[in-house]
Image (cartoon, rainbow, N blue to C red; front, side, top):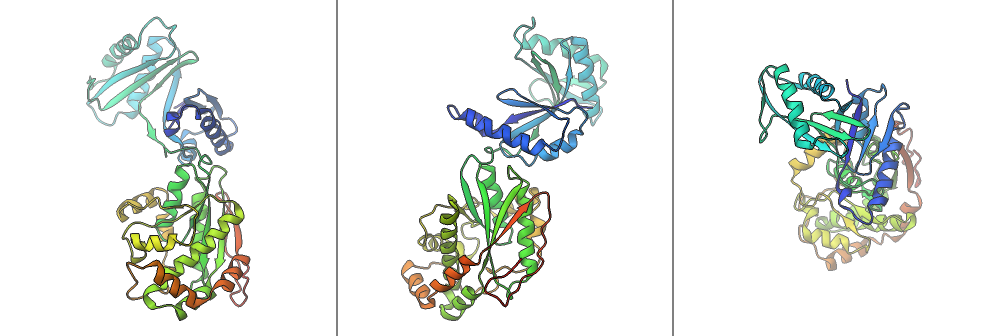
Length: 409
């Protein structure tokens, strides 16, 4: 049915001097993702890209485009000559295919980038419209609020005819905004936060704090599956998951710290470890799924106390989101059903009855010093396991020996 997919860019078109850098990156990302279609022909028109299908199914190509950040929208086009009768016949075919009811209003909108053509945009629209109207029963013109718009794009290489646009992910090309380490808990929020960071051009890696036997191997598998899902949105389809053995640290916190401060101290230690991981692997920022007031540990006061342990920027993409908004995105990116699997992570197994809502730095430091965790932190960092994940392969946890300081996956 369709010959070509017209792809438009998003926010990157607002760039001026840096536009060429963004353009090079998005072109590389598109070619990387679409190389699975050997006959697909890609033509760059600077502010848009044309994908000539050459026999490939448009549904399959669109499915891949839906994983590429930096794309504003795309349209399914038919190519025709500059003859009005041919353009009209193509338009009639498209309208009849898309028309869902007997009576519908429409207008024709023309973009004439080929200035050598003797008619202007308005004249082209009028010529096509007067040929279409008698051929399609129930079709009526409404130039102000049409139910359907026929777009005609006159270019030197031909005429592209299409009806509507499919929204893309938007954002910036992957890899344009540095690198980030996502605190991946296994819940609903952190993968959504990771996705929003990817959407703004951040290349991410993930870190997960694993506490066997308090958390099951299935909780770790859940995190792996979430990261594999997120790999689909990465430019190269890959991501590293760093699994931190957290059992000894968590048990010592539980035994030593005032009950109300358990979560606060636990999160401070997590960020201390994340800080050192970022330094070791030259990662630019830490990313989490916190939303103001969602739980006791996500108050402004709690965030301030946690931030105190690191000078690395901490990004919180979900800070002002409601839970319903977060769930909506989770469903869209297909992480929701994975996140709600009933397996606890280390953030939920030792939750106190009355966690402190407004902790202070002074009190947090006092409680933390009671634990004397420096040796355990060093050991945990030393024994981090790195799992290389890909959107093309499913990784299953084979074995974890919880009786050793260093576990094997």
